Image 1: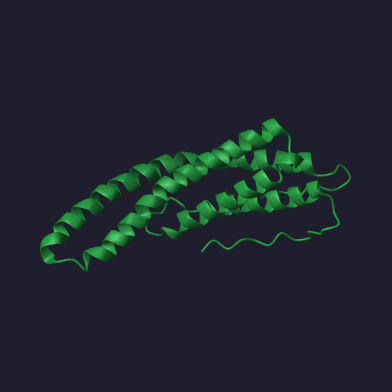
Image 2 (image 1 turned 180 degrees about the horizontal axis):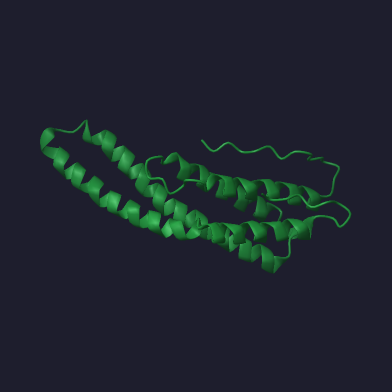
Length: 167
């Protein structure tokens, strides 16, 4: 399961924008962290963990939207949504394959070949979804996302406070 990182130093007396900067920085870093080895088809939980991380980041960005420049937020949010969509395409196949693998052992011998054929079709779709996902988790694209999130954090962060790094 994708464990969320605690957002340290949150204080209910501090400005909302400061909380926005702290939370989005941490949630952005989680997405980047969970991208490692996400294309490994033998460990489907990596896709799940990154997908959960993108949902947490998206929620934080939407909750704190008033703290960020609108155009910058929209661009970053669109990228996070695109990554989440690609992760979802892959995850759907991962879950279906796992369920059918389990199901195949419970059906009559005569029906197993049909289940296995369906699994093969899903594996081909899984590989295609994985190739599509690879574009979204390419190092240069993740670096661009990290920089975009960092710009959001800097825009929200009060001028007198040091910027929290995303990575």
